[in-house]
Image (cartoon, rainbow, N blue to C red):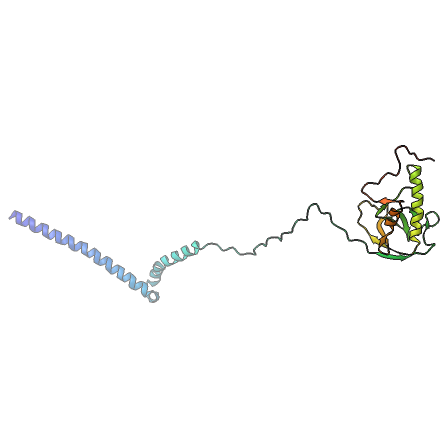
Length: 232
């Protein structure tokens, strides 16, 4: 009898335990269903007593999700895009800048237009490759004439005097044209470098052909021999 009673007690205890465990699952399912129904009808819950508190509890996950999504967005940077400066090609190396040549000027001279400087100082001849034209100092750019006042020997002074007189004759022979030259040998004191043209030929070439002057070079040539000395 004692064994039978103990068996009945164990069975009743097991039944009670199983019923208690099922009850918890039933309650959890009812709460879950009620929560789903309440969430679907959350618009009407605000009118019920205690509905606002329940709405606050239901809306907390939604607010957190919204905050998280806003925080996850990357920051947008606005502003004007800086433009790259335009590339300027460098100036070529080894090529000097060329200045524009002076315009050709034509002039009609007469037999008494040019004198030797000292008598007049507007149109006059200084030496075999330099003269004044309207008071402006002109250097014949394509020739090198012997000196007269600064001659280093008698031969240079004599040839310089002939070249000076011949240049005056050529200038007074008629119309001539002054053509600009870019000779780097000239400076402001020497005069403005010009090529004197008449009939398509340089007057300097005429003086060279007559042996009175030489073609201008980078260095002035000597007109005296080593043994020759200037007198006076």
